[in-house]
Image 1: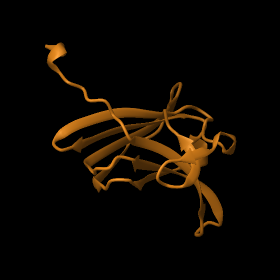
Image 2: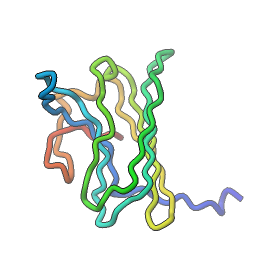
Image 3: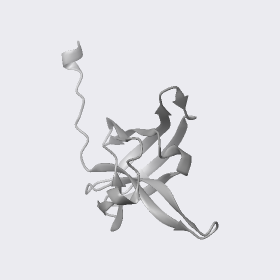
Image 4: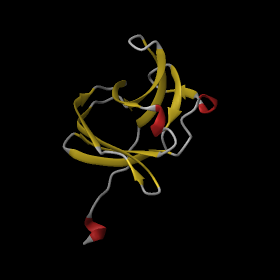
Length: 131
């Protein structure tokens, strides 16, 4: 039975953390984005996020994107500074032409920091890509 279940490989979808200026608070914030690098849209994306380390566990957050167009990105959530020392996991499920795709993306503890910045696809920004 298990051999009959097809699990398609996720390609061209990224979860990234980007440090951006916040005009309201006159400071930089780390924001998490979902990126679709593909040449086709994804639909009905559900992103479930949580942070954890040992017995410390954050609230579970849920986000929905009806459509993420081809070669685009959308902000998912703000990461508070106290969450950066935790493992931050983003479980992403979405559809492409009525076929469901799923992947878990993780930022390891203390990996979200300026020394780890790199080029981010589509956004033309510096950030950190989740694994």
